[in-house]
Amino acid sequence: MVCERANRRRNPCDACADEYEKMASVASLNNTVQRTVCFKIKIGDNNMKALVYNGPRDVRVMDVPDAKIEQPTDVLVKITTTNICGSDLHMYEGRTDMEKGRIFGHENLGKVVEIGKSVTNIKVGDMVCLPFNIGCGHCKNCESGYTGFCLTMNPGMAGAAYGFAGMGPYSGGQAEYLRVPYGDFNCLKLPEDAVEKENDYVMLSDIFPTGYHATELANVQPGDSVVIYGAGPVGLMAAHSASIKGASQIMVVDNHKDRLKLAEEFGAIAIDFSMGSAVEQVLELTKGIGADKGCECVGYQCCDKHGTEHSNITMNELVQAVKATGSIGVVGVFVPKDPKSKDPLQKEGHMDFDFGNFG
Ligand SMILES: NC(=O)c1ccc[n+]([C@@H]2O[C@H](COP(=O)([O-])OP(=O)(O)OC[C@H]3O[C@@H](n4cnc5c(N)ncnc54)[C@H](O)[C@@H]3O)[C@@H](O)[C@H]2O)c1
Ligand SMILES: [Zn+2]
Ligand SMILES: [Zn+2]
Image (cartoon, rainbow, N blue to C red):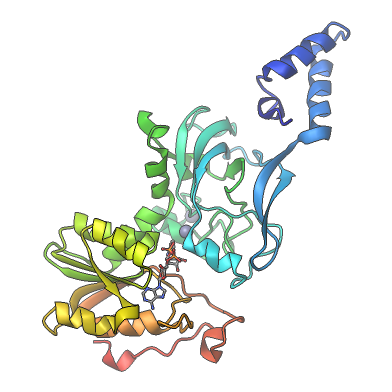
């Protein structure tokens, strides 16, 4: 049995409090007793459960050392909700350089159970959502609002994240507990309805802002027609965001019928690329001109209708499906190296992009 409160060395649970009482009666120093009780629990069970990467298509729920406060600016969160992202799938399939033993999970929400001594804004008991990018809050990029490109949290590369290949050593939150560096900066404190609406608020950790950001990068304006490639969570949130921004026509491309049905529920026109060229369907719906704006929400593992990967499909189709002078926002992940790809260009992180038609 894991006594999580005793593990935190504060407020032991009833069972441990009983143990404490029993031992207190035979020991003279409370301090000694307390250490003895916690030590006993530690030998047996001081491990949390977490989802650990063990190689391509092999993840396991394992006992790992508890996440803990390491710096005075840290916050420790007991995870109550966490999502699986399309980016986890790239890692799960062994298409990144994710190290064995790392804990997955960058879409996290939970309750603060401990704070470092320099933390001032966040308190024990707060419900917090954790945007997936870890920022220091004080470097040039963080100060300019580019927290996804923090210069100090992952030296040598701009940007850090929880449980993410190439984005620093930080553990993910598909686990019982998560260490949040610079907790004051990285915790999004939730309002009183946090528990009741945690399935909604957890979308703020990645998927909703990422979908919204696709529409920002594409500069979606009221009245625009927008084509979105991908009806995964990111594409659906991009469709929702385009609708919030007043787009007049939203088209979502995918070949998964269940996902396309969800896109329709968001008010979008479903375009099934298994039924014919997506570009032709978009041109037909836009009087041959093309959409005003386009969003890429698929990434480098995009496929043709036979399920064969070609990393350039969505980008080149967007060039054709969006009108000249339109703009395209790309949030799908494209990686610097992809050794497992069958395409020699993609292996090196390059792409055969129709630059000549991109005007
Ligand atoms: N930039 C960021 O911060 C960020 C954050 C989250 C996710 N992502 C990336 O966004 C992408 C989407 O994430 P998700 O969680 O929605 O993933 P997902 O895997 O659930 O969805 C991807 C969808 O793309 C569809 N697809 C494949 N080939 C296609 C094609 N040729 N045309 C149209 N659709 C095609 C798939 O059928 C699938 O439904 C991934 O690459 C993910 O890594 C980026
Ligand atoms: Zn993600
Ligand atoms: Zn920073």
